[in-house]
Amino acid sequence: MKKTIAPSPRDMAFVGWLQGLVAKDKKGELAALRRGLMYEDDQLYLLFSYIPYGLLQQLRTPQEEQDYLLVAALFASSLLCFSPEELEKQRFNLGDSLRKYAEKNRLDGGSADTDELLFEPLRRRLEAMLACPRNELHEHLRQAVSLLTSKSVPVDWAQLLCDLRAWGWPGHPIQWDWSRAFYVGKKGGEE
Image (cartoon, rainbow, N blue to C red; front, side, top):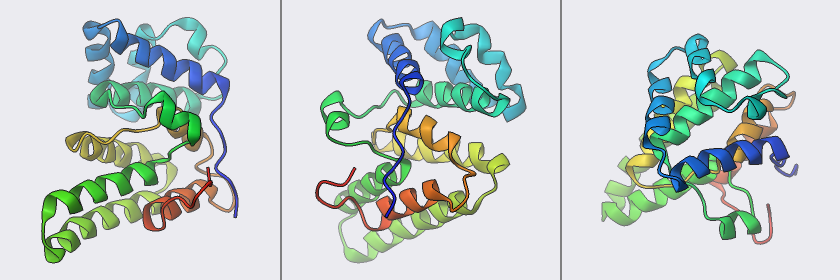
């Protein structure tokens, strides 16, 4: 079983900058980034002016630039992060966050029948995301983050950046990781 790939220092620095916007109460900048969710993927370049030059200059491909800009918009729409203490113990992928969402729904839902109704649409949403081609992934991410935000479920933004970079790798390691995290969960000590 492959271990999840770890975020790069560049991923961590970018997420640190995003979190700094929240800590410094930069509502205007966050609102500008959040507006990026209204753009088509090929219009995300409009967000470049809000990101410090040094954070994006080392990106290697237009796809990486687009991913970073999308994550900035998603982050600004959510503002929910795992705590540094949680991230020190392990990284979380989007499958982990969706599993936490399902667990919150089960706690809020009451009966077993309600649990199943809440879980099934989420399962279908995840499977559609895992099967989608790269050019459709951003819309699925927008929907998933919106869903997670509705139940105050955090996202590991640096891991998401890392996973986006590896989405098209042979063998689909990211899709395996997300699916395993959602359906199976973390085993003791696994990262």
